[in-house]
Image (cartoon, rainbow, N blue to C red; front, side, top):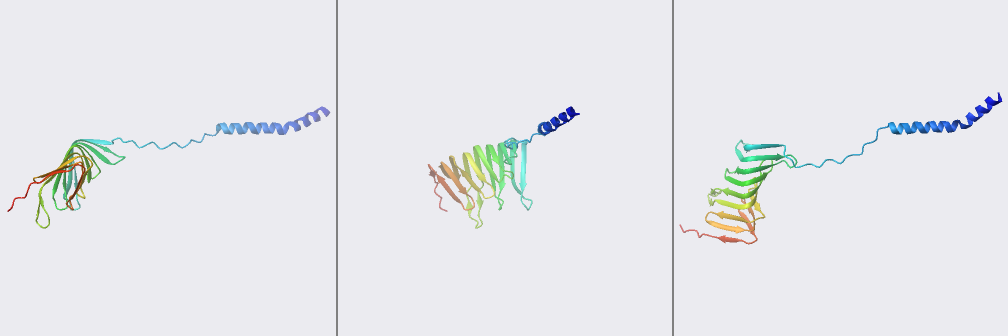
Length: 204
């Protein structure tokens, strides 16, 4: 009887230690069994990759009256969703302003926004505006712009370039290292090495 009592006393003495050991084992098992928390991964960088392409295409836009506003044709084009732009090979553009005056643009390559209101012409760029008459009836001479780079803003009728350009206005000819032309105000800023050849107007 005394031996049983001694054994019971010993078990009672070591019982807290045994319980702590069991608790430690259970805690270790829970830690091993719990799924690890995934660390947030940085968002993948947006890649400049085309989501569709076109070959031998023509894209037209119309104004609120249903009249043709612009037409863009090319041999091949790739659309890039990250910038919502089109890169076009062998581009040809026809654009009409509010008065219906036509401006055409061609180049080996072009970069345009979604509605072709802003166009960067690259390689043998050429922009031509036919002779017109203003609201007073005064004739405005035909304009031609040439260069390896021309940046056209169709809606505001503005043309810019940070590279050498050649301009002809009727019989007159100008060259410059850069240009900023506003067709609405008829103001042109030529900078860098500017040269001009003016043909005198014949008396009536």
